[in-house]
Amino acid sequence: MDAAAPVDAFIVDVRSDERRALPPPGDVLDASDAMDQSEPPEPPEPPGRWSFTWLNGLVDVESVRLCFVPIVADREMRDQAIGPAGLLFGKSIAFSEFGGIDLSTMDLHPYAVVGGLGPGAEGGQTCTAILDAPDSAAGDDGAAHEPIVVRLPLIPAGTLAEGRSYLGVVTGCARAWPYADAEAGSDARDASDAGNDADGPGDADATGIDVFRPPPRAAVCGASTGDPNAGLVLVRLSRRDVGASFGFQAVHASAAIAAARVSIERTGGSAPALTADIGPYQIVPRDGLIAVPQEDFGPTVGSAMLRVASPASTFPALTVPFSSALAASDIPEAGLALGDRFSLVLIGAQPGQNPGPPWNAGRIVVIRNAPFTLGN
Image 1 (tube, rainbow, N blue to C red):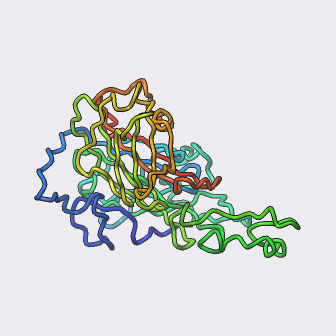
Image 2: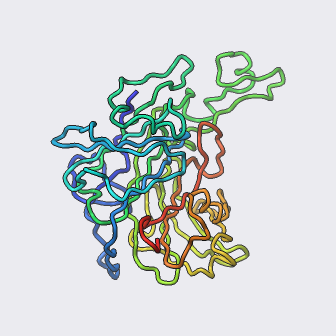
Image 3: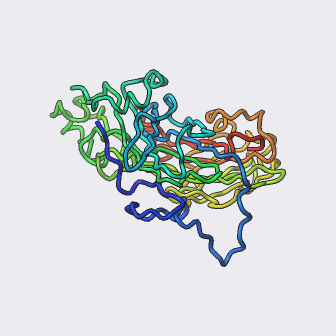
């Protein structure tokens, strides 16, 4: 089953591309990379090693394998496809090169491979073998028994060609919504309806207490229809010097979340050490980093609290210790050093929603902006 990429997928490049159907959001890798001339110009990004970090933000799967196919003369070269083994939700992998692929002249077509393989088992097949296999199908029980290949938006030649640090996040849902209507209130009938319909989405006993109500689709997948809406968010990360501080950017990479406020707060502190308001598919700040001195975190860097809330409300919808976010992102707190640079990436369902399997709740993932150098 080969899902078509949405026409409004959030993938943009660093050059003009007449094939792009819609303009990109303002703060995500736009075509001109122009700055507001009324503001003092930011210092240029320092030269550094090329890197590309890939993050699994698909909401409705436990793990995903990414396959990258170069395109030469408008033809996919699937025999040259590359890709890592499976990534669990919220996990990332960093590339220091795309062996044999000329990113300045070749388009790159990413695919997400989900289902039928199990976490980590995707490494048993090559990307070429998976992509060339006959189309898979779902069984009678609706479960995918073979890998499902999800087509993601094309990355045009030149997009990843500069010696910069890039982040790509696959987001949304890879599978069709399993319930009939868009909203949870419509998907689950009331107790009397459910009790009289054995084929309904839930069952009720005689008292009408036990009624299954699926979570709202828009709050989980961010889709207005039941179709798969897997997409791609692609941004450049800053590696500018922050001196004797820690540097941060915030990235919005959830199809289910509207505007959000991300903050780092010292426990018992009077003001946040960092606050960033991000709209859908934005990176803030777009150029440069927010510098946070070590003492602003509290007794230790990990003792601070990481919060996500609506910009219109001070009530946090998601609150986790920064140490927990670091550990979940496989970044040892003991290895942090002044000058390190990170991005806080918002993925998953809306904070406050806990939809349960197979859907993943909202999460903040910490990504190193320069994964292959000291002083990240």
